[in-house]
Image: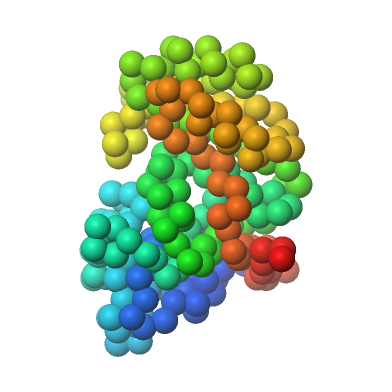
Length: 230
């Protein structure tokens, strides 16, 4: 079975946690796409009556609407029952790096409003420590890009402005820029998270610590599930 088929299987397994009348956070990215499509299929088939979706990006909102999932907002539904999303890297205690698609600000807002956060990944995203495979996306307002870049270097990171294929800077749904910051292996994600929050101009970063309840992994051996350690 190829990687896409495994991701689809894992995403659809995650959807089995969704029940009628739930408010559901809709993630962003290639794995979340399969989950949104399955939720839409079940909703249209009458098996998930009364659900409402909360999008983590303009991309996921449009995909939900294409699949005829009723879309709400946090203004109307500030508490979310379950969110299904992906991640770029998952460490051994279920901390995450997210933001490869540039949606980590809205994804974190939704995650913090969620009772049960389910992350779906393929096995290549699993690491002992964050930073082994992925840089930390840091969303920054435009006027602060140079001061924040200098700050990142002073605390041991290597910032790189994210660019699009047309050589224009990548902009988030809020119109901000992203610095992809290589900190190497991150043994204390919580400390780095708190440090990044101290710099004015940093809107949000892609370290998600203590926000994940279940990780569903698509592997060559099939589907594996990891739960939060009590």
